[in-house]
Length: 227
Length: 231
Image (cartoon, rainbow over all chains, first blue to last red; front, side, top):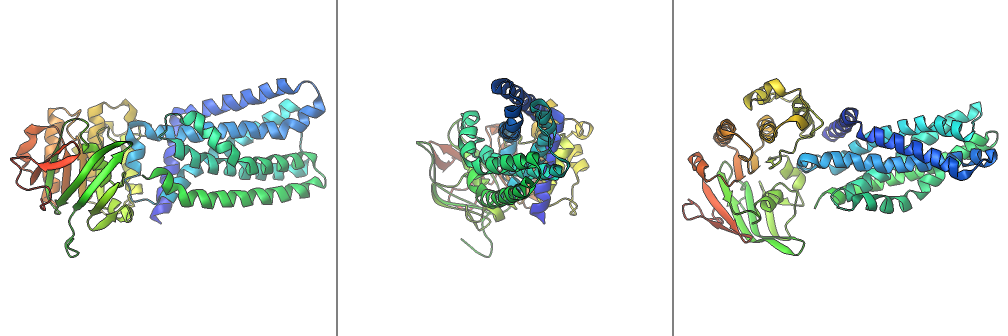
C-alpha cells in the first residue's frame, strides 16, 4: 500500500514539475512537429506515398519525443541532489520506476493523441470510422511501450556525462518490437475493412511486448539506481 | 553484534573504492543508539562517501556494514525506514514548493496521515519558512534550502540522523537552530552522525569526535571514545 502511494506521489511530482517548467512540453512538441514537417519534405509530392508513410513517421516522432521526455524527467530530479534524497526513502525501486513511468506514459499518450491528427492532416491519411478505436488503443499501448523502455534507460544513463548520446543508442534497438507493433496496428487501422482484424492481432502483440518490458524493467530497476 | 540491542551503526573493516581510488580503507566504527558523533576531515578525505554508504546509497567494496542490525546492502530497505539524510545541497525538488516537498517526503516515508509530533506547518515554522512554504524551492537561497532539509528531518524524525555539513550555507541564526534541533533529537534518543568542518560547535558535547584522513578513520585526541568502541 505504501509503495502504491509512493508511486502515485512520484507520478504527481513529475506532473507538477512539468506543469510548472513546461520544459519537456515545449521541447517535445516542437521536436515532433519538426520531425513530421521535415519527413514530409523528404518524402516528396506523391500523395499515396505520403499517406502510407504517415503511421511510420508518426511513431518515429513519438519515439524521439519519448527519449526527450524520459531524459528530462530524470534530469529534473538530478538537480539539488533530489534523486539522491529520493532514493534514501524506504520505497521499493519498482514503485519509483512505476511512478516515473506513469507520468511519462500519460505524457507520451497525450502527445501521440495530439500528433496523430497533425500527422494525418499533413500526410493526407485518414482512418475509417471503425478504425478510430484501433488508433486509440495503438496510441495507448504504443506510448506505454515507449515510456516503459525510455524510463528504464533514462534512469540507467541519468548519472552519465554522455547521457544524451547514450540514451537513444541504448534504447532504440530495444524498442523495435514496440515500434513494429504500433506502426503496423496504425497502418491496419488506416486501411480499414478486414485489416481491422489484423490491427487487433498487432495490438495483442503490442500489449504482450508491453507486459514483458514492464515486468522486466520494474524487476531490475534497482540495479539501475542503486550502487 | 548484540541482537538484543543492536548498534545504530556498525562497520567492520569497510572499504569503498570509487573508480581507482580507495576512498575508505578498513573503517571500523560502532555507534550506540542515542549518541552524537561528529566526523571531521579535510576536503576529499571521504566524509561524504562514508555518509552516503551509511545512507545506503553506496555499498561497501569489502567489509560488513549494519544499521540497527540490518546488514547493508541486503537489508537496505529496512535500514532506510530508520534513517534520514541531510545532504550538503539539501536534496529538495526545485520545481516543487517547500510544503509540497515535505508532503512528498511523508508520502515516500509512508507517513502521510499518520500521527506525528510535528506536522508540515509546524516543521516549516520551526525552521523559519512558514511564510515561504508556498514558494518554489528554486527561488530559495542555499541557506533556505538547508532549512527546508532540516524541516524534513524534523517532520520524519528518523532514528538515525545523517548530517553532511549541516552548518554549510546557514547564517548564525540558522546554525543555532541546527544546534537546537540536533540537541533535541539527541534528547529524544535519536542517533546523530554528523560530518562537519565547524570546530566551534563542540558545545553540543558529542559523544565522539572522529577524523577521516586518507580514508582511515581515527579518533581525535580530545575524543571521548575510540572509533571501534561504541560511541
